[in-house]
Amino acid sequence: MRRRAITRIEVAVVVVILGAALCGLVVWIQQAREAGRRSACHNGLYILARGVRNYSNGIGAFPRATVADERLSPEKRLSWFLDILPYVEKTGVLPIDRTKDWDAEVNLSAATGFAHVFLCPSASHDLRDIKPGPTSYVGIAGIGEDAASLPAGDPRAGVFGYDRVTRPDDIIKEQGDVLLLAETALDNGPWTAGGRPTVRGVVPEEAPCIGVGRQFGGNHPRGGNVAFVDGSVRFLSDDVDPKFFAAMATITAEKPEDEERTR
Image 1 (cartoon, rainbow, N blue to C red):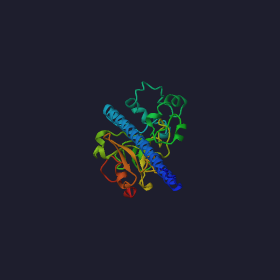
Image 2: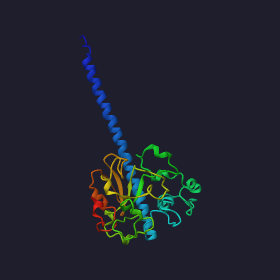
Image 3: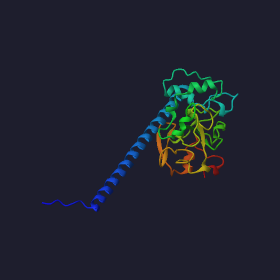
Image 4: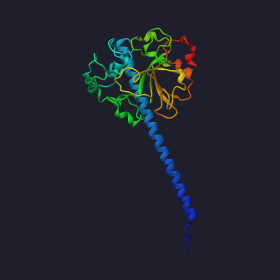
């Protein structure tokens, strides 16, 4: 029997089917890789949150946003990561000089090599040029740009403050309802640096609060990972209510004095 020749139309159909299958496979691989990176980010944030909790259990208070030093401005001080690092990594004693700026030569060289602990796997590769190493994770200081500078007892205050000390008993909400840490892809800086690179307040005026190009999140599609005082980590959607997000940033149940901040 004579075999029928394959027509051009049939060839075109096969090519289209194979192309669609290949595109689907590429999309599936990309989604699988992102799911893995998001899971690794979740785990990294969980480890940091547990480190903060272990520190607070041992000391009786959460770490300050910066290493205490009244001679230096908060932006020149070393960050809170130095206090919890022994609870996260088996580092031994780092040759960090706590009496000097975070960017003093001795501190820059001593802190190099720990960036992998503080960086989301989905973070931009451009961050690798930051020395001594960038962080994707920041402590939550409360509500407002000035949140880290607020005095103890201020209704806008969160867990982290430059000169205030937060103890577990100071948190009158359920610990699972109070933000401790959040990932961000905005204004990333060195993990040893005090100030904005490692601690921030939630600014409701810049709502929506979480997602690509926003003050928190931005490393993953449709939201970002955040950690709570109880050590739990959740992925919050980018459509979360800004009022709800801001309310989670404070340690008290009271509303801020300026209610416009939460609108």
